[in-house]
Length: 343
Ligand code: WQD
Image (cartoon, rainbow, N blue to C red; front, side, top):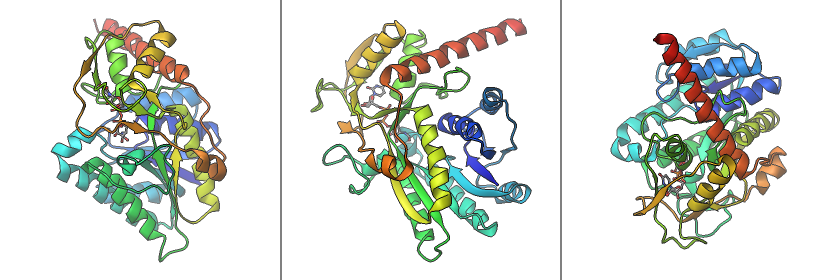
């Protein structure tokens, strides 16, 4: 039996494919490359030395999805595929609701048609909104402030509702905090198209000389140094958590929400200093106005993941920074070789 990974060419998806293959799982990958590249699929095969079926299919294409399930024996789905830029979702709500919700509903319909009723869902700490305190546990109130976050919260409720009439459904909602870093090979990592929205890829572009300086969005928050505090987690730790969640989904039914975080909060300036220490590269920055929608502090209580999944984060902040920078450096080397070979 295989695990289907939707969005498996993406940042977290590709790292999860590596860990699943190395844990001995058979996988099938689906991606439409709207926010990823075919090179990531090849990199997973290079890193693991294993092959697997890949389908370039959009979840809105029910016939394409039907073919994936007809041609493979799938017993569990890890569902990453979806649009995920907070700011873009505010500007394009209908595109986000249609893509993320309709695509997921079609996925569930095809899953049910093929008797596949195990889902591990890529949710997000964004469903907690602005928490009244920290650390955050899974029973905290849920609220969202943008269409991207609302699609995550709506899908948590939709998938949970599947479990009510049909006791065969198993849904594990993994609420990620802030995934950063990259696989040690430097072959896969986070490198969004255009100007990065998120902190670590932006810092890496500044370190690479592609951007002039980092804008620190506000230094007047009620935190230890005035800048925003988040729970940064190594993407490989996050990927390993998905392997544990697949095993859990095969042994349990019903709907369970689980935080995947380190339980430690670091500020923007903590990250800047950790990156400079880990890489030896200076990151010039300027204090800028707060970014609309940002919250002061957000970090997890990860004890349920340890209790239920037998999982906890292992990598530290320096590993996260060094691996993120290693990916960018290796990517620049690859691009340089490709340019020279074209000349
Ligand atoms: C982190 C901190 C910023 C950029 C978002 C989504 C969340 C998830 C992860 C998808 C904040 C500060 C950032 C910059 C800065 N995405 N910052 N300058 O906003 O915590 O979470 O990405 O699942 O759902 O909400 O992550 O990396 O954008 O910001 O000062 O150029 O860095 O203010 O304090 P965020 P982030």
